[in-house]
Length: 95
Image (cartoon, rainbow, N blue to C red; front, side, top):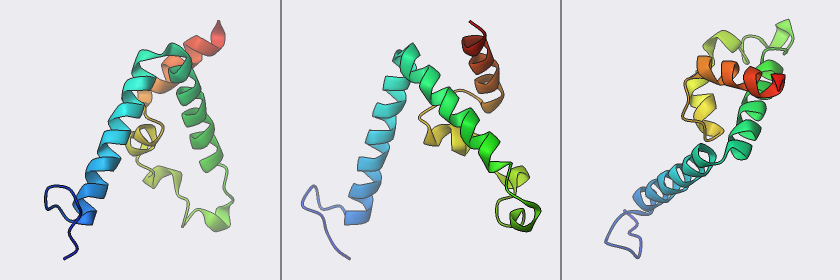
């Protein structure tokens, strides 16, 4: 077991904590800035649309029905439920 320099934790544990801290910080930034939130929603929507356009030959690998939309939303630092992201993105785009 490899120990990190801080508090006797393994490098893996320290990396996980650092990642979670970064993720929370990004989510906080997106949650408090409507501009960042609009960009994150737009990127999320574009990703989901692009993911579903893969050809039939690749559906076994890139199956949109198997995609966990909540995890995808989290990867864009969005805390909203995926069904609300689409609705709020439409409202912002409609303005």
